[in-house]
Structure formats: C-alpha cells, structure tokens
Length: 397
Ligand SMILES: [Zn+2]
Ligand SMILES: [Zn+2]
Image (cartoon, rainbow, N blue to C red; front, side):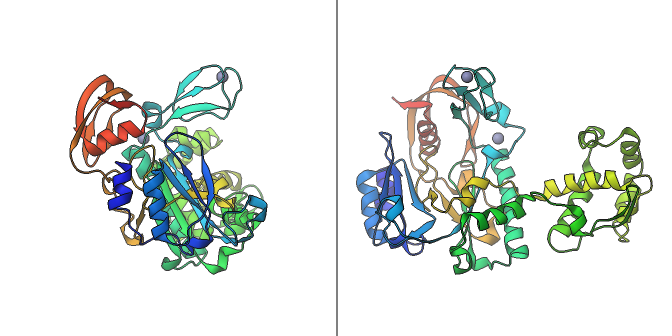
C-alpha cells in the first residue's frame, strides 16, 4: 500500500526548497536507519521512495555542501528554523485512557504520559504506545496557533516565511524558511525557544509595576503587544476560570483566594476601564504569582530540543507516517483553525480489509469511530485497518 502511494500519488510539489543540499534519512520496515542520502531533484527522490518503500522518510532542516558526507565533512551552510508541537509533551485529560508505557528493563507498566525514570528501577528506557485522538490533536493545534501568533506578531515573520504541517501522528510542525534565520547557531535558537516558552519571564519587565510588597501601581493591559499583553490575557483567563483549587495550587493564601472569588465580577468589569490590577485586597506578591501563572498559560508548549538541533532530521512533507499510514501535510495558515487531521490526512480511502486486532482503544478515522478492540477479527475501511496495522496492534488475516 505504501509503495502504491509513492508510485501513484506522491506529489513532487511542496518538497523542501534546495533539495540537493539536504540530507535524507529513512527507516525501512525491516528496522534500522538509512541516512546520509541525497537527491539532486524530486523525481530521483520519488524513484528511491518507490524502490525502498520506507516506513518513514526524513530530511535535514540543514543545508549542506556535501549532504552525503559524514557529519564532520558535510559543510553546514545553515538550517531552517523548526518547531515541533507534539501531544507527547502536553498533558491531556485523555492520555491516561489511551496511552501506556512499559519499562524495558524491569517490565513495570503504567498509563498516561511516559515518566522520565522508571518508578521501580530508575531506568530511562521505555516502550510506549501513544495514540492520536481528537482531543490530544486539538490541544496540540491550539499550542501551534499560539506559536504562529508569536512568530508573526513578535518576531515579524511574514506569512510566506511560515509553513505549517500536520505531522501525521500526534502533532504539528512549523517551519520558518527564511535567509534571516538560516545561519543562526544553536545558542541563538535557544534564545528564541526561551522567548516562546516564557522561560525566565519576569512580569516586572513587561509592565507590572509594584511599590514594595503590598501595592501594585500599574500592570500590562489586554491590547499591549508582546508578552505584556500576553500576561494580561493570561491573568484575565486565569481569574475568569480558576477554581478555588487552581488558585490554591499557585501558592496563594486562603484569604486572597476568597477575595478573588468574591470579587470575580468586579475584576472582570475592571478590565474594561483599564485598571485591572487594582483589585482591593490583593498584594504585589500575590499579583506576581498570578501574573507568572497567567504567562505560563500563554506560552506555547514546543518540544525545545527540536528547535535548537541545527542538524535535525524532520519528516518529509507528503510522506507517510509509519505509525499511522496518515501523511504529513501542509496546512495553509488561514485553514489551521478548521483543519481536521484525522480526516484530511487520510490517504487510503478505498476498500476494506479484514484484520485481527490484539488490543486498541477507540479510534476515530475519517469521521468514523471504531473500537475499542480486544482480540477481535474485524473488517474495517482501509484507512482504519492500515492505521491499526501501522500501530502494530493488528495483523492481516
Ligand atoms: Zn523499570
Ligand atoms: Zn487524547
């Protein structure tokens, strides 16, 4: 099925720019990794894809003089600026239902987000099974929209310089292809990452003025640009929606929490006449905690490692994802809000297939819901069957 896709449907438009300067890498279905490949044009790449039929295809965000040489001899010329937003890095309410992991060392099993260390033996090697679901993907999309807003409004990248992609599994990629950023080193890219995640952000440098510990003199407003406005928005959202327990988690004292909840209406009104930070009974220390928490809500939860790696291999546009049989695909900036990944990235739309499913949670593909399954023989539409086969939980019978 993958072969027929690459032979008949893989488009040669929308390949990475300057393809001849990129390193390509592939994971064959038999396992292992084939890398340091290069192609002088899209047609040669397509031919290779048809012959090898890899489960995953990647290319370098970097441009090289000699993409096929060993790492030291490649001659790094620059790299696109890449952002990866993956549901793996965002806690969602549903990951406890559909995701699980197992320690490779001792066999300890758990549900939800994979921990950094095994709670039983301390090992850091896990086998995990994560699933793309509509809730996880919607969460990742909202983080992507926050990122795009920062890249265009704060950094001033034009819409033409940004490319937005669905990854084919659990997230989104944003590529900045611009000469302005091409030669930035890892450290410079880390500065950009820190800005986006709001690391070390001090509201005092973004308009929050205090007099001693007790009084806020002034604060940022909703219409302010950059992080100032973002802090204001975050605080507004937080105080509008926060429960007693949410506020307690911020480390606020009981009487402050009471004041906030009692004065919620006053507070929301006060944002209209631009004196939001003067709510009676809340001191400068508490405001600082609230502002920090508000800022956190507005930060975009990107995978920081991807952006700073200037040699990173990233999934090739329009290639198939080996874990889902969905394709990585570009989404026009104006269409992101309405984009439906589990429908629009479906490739195999014809026919059905009978498979034996070992274990799978409920899945949604192409607007249809299937499962959950437990040792079941079932005839499914091709896209759903391919999805479960790629996930490694089913066999063709
Ligand atoms: Zn263990
Ligand atoms: Zn989910």
